[in-house]
Image 1 (spheres, rainbow, N blue to C red):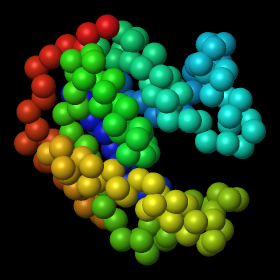
Image 2 (image 1 turned 90 degrees about the vertical axis):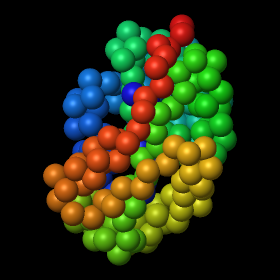
Image 3 (image 1 turned 120 degrees about the vertical axis):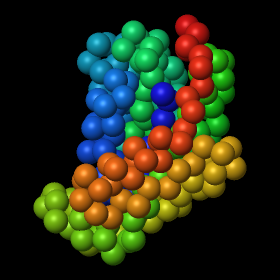
Length: 193
């Protein structure tokens, strides 16, 4: 299966994506990990992306998508993959779709974690990170809403979106997740190199 997880920080995507990827036997991919792996390996694209980050800038969409394209070439992605926190913008989603179509391996589903803002705020406040002040948390949620919320509409229009109520225990949320996926019929194609 090829799946995108979308949802605000604190919604539980990381925890659930790890569990689901293991259950499905697919690779979980986050762009942060992909970037760090590429940089550590001394790959030119990873070095180029790191230069943007070192200057405090966002890595351009085309560079992020090229990093993802390189990562999908590895053997551990042949059975499928789950994107955690990617794509973040409509442009990244469009570029990802073009990439996957060229590989004859389109997405099977987009799972949106839905959670009230006050619940998110409570979760993020409890993490105790030094950068989790009230204003920082609210700013991250505003940035998420502006950039990433539109992805739900995009995937809805493509018939791929499944909304997951992210309030409850980890087991309850996971049960909702697997219930939604039980209705998804994976594309019967192997990715083309």
